[in-house]
Length: 295
Image (cartoon, rainbow, N blue to C red; front, side, top):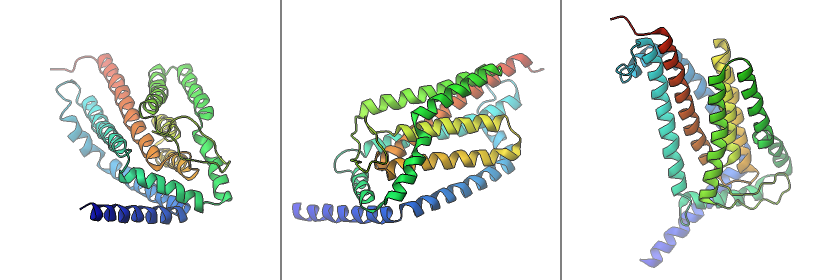
């Protein structure tokens, strides 16, 4: 019945508005709790991976032994492939699920609008100023020079394959983000507080995507070239920066909540694809230098 459907829609809209208002009132506290939980989960996951890596390596290798003659190489590549396929597939599915929720009448789109309005009402100048400074960690004016400097350093040190993978992930990711913005052509939320300015299309977030690609790939490079005791701290620092940069875009109301989720999703998928390609080429080259296995 039309009347019942309308009443249901109104009740749903009210629930979303109340949820958005609750989130906005406690936005900073919720963000800090989220980051803390993510860091704890990262630490636990890292320890579990280290403890069970031999078992995982053996399981992941089974699907690769037919195409690689060296069991050790197959195991290593198999683990990377398994993890990267999960990350790539998960990121891709998440992105398209988010994109499907952008239309009028969709719950996520309605929550986006309600949250932006609630944040505009509840966030004070001190919070906006702090996140206005923090968001610069994801500015293209910082990420592009950093990306170029890392690429030059990798080439200068003879790591040309890593330099190529770095350029593909950061530069290719930026092009992918730009193309998706043009495709979806979503307008940004209104933001007139003066602590941040942004123009152009909104979906997916370039700051969220760029931060994940640059800081995530930088952490990957550091982990590859550092002692094991630095691996977890580096990964945790990169994760914290990525989350804070993405959250800053929502709190500053220059992006919708779903823009940031989509930025993380498409960047995670792209980074996983680039890392898998890098490891496949690197280990295939090593296998070719070793030569055919005996027997």
